[in-house]
Image (cartoon, rainbow, N blue to C red; front, side, top):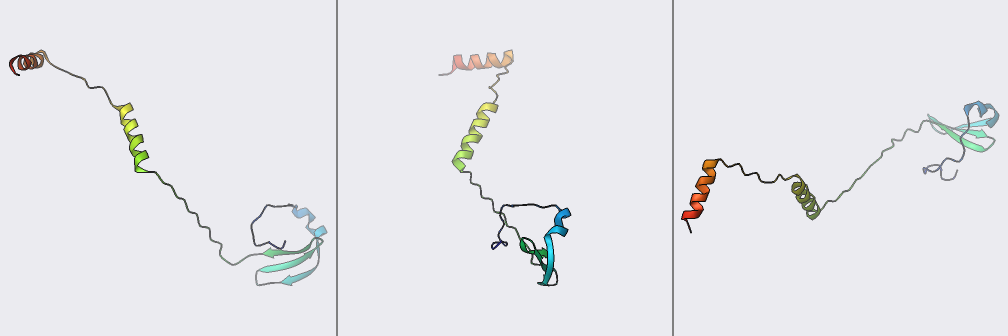
Length: 103
């Protein structure tokens, strides 16, 4: 694979029971942990890659104040309880008296 260093879709996955039929004579030591082995398909690399692999993930979200305010306003409109007037007879008398005696 000329682009073996680039992640891509897997074309073929073989079971380890086929290794004796695939591996040919010929082995090259690439580094302390990496070997190249000759196979019926060509050369393969096996072993540990010692270079650290880092993954970076970036997530960006935007919520405008206008949208947030609109949603919050709708929430409070739904959740708002209607005003409940709890007046005692004395309260009602005082209010009626006030309305009758003031302009």
